[in-house]
Length: 212
Image 1 (cartoon, rainbow, N blue to C red):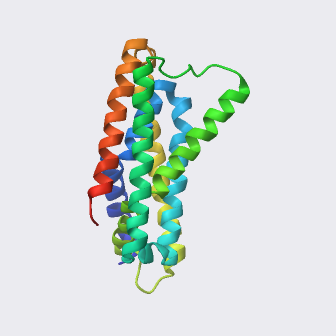
Image 2 (image 1 turned 180 degrees about the vertical axis):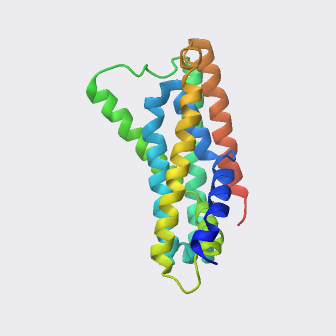
């Protein structure tokens, strides 16, 4: 398949996949609701860095090894489920305490810690997602010319995907952030933490029990 001729199909597929509900979207929307657009940016960047890492691993053939190995896939599935369950339980605890999350305003040191914690959270959630490995080895080869450089082509497609996803997630975050003042009301914030915790726990359980 010619790469340029397949780009419209690739872009359309990426947009549809990115708009599908999942752990990434749940994290972005929760962060945007509680901390605004600026608070969602590090989460989005972390998620996309993790996704690009999987794209490069797929291009190098490592993702295929993970997907083919029962032990590696099981370990990754357990880690991915544990990460989502931990995030969900943390949200539940915040809702139970009724304290919500601190406002986005604060000292520079606190803001930096929150930025890097949100960024790391996004990276870990994406890297610990076993479906990402399966997705990469099943999706990308359809758009890589058989006679072309696999790693270089995969790297370029990965850059295109994370660019599209970043734009989509930031647009969604901006839309949610416009209602940020309402979301950050104490009662609404507690309700949002409870709901988002339930969603994350449900996603974690789905990862834990799902097969390939």
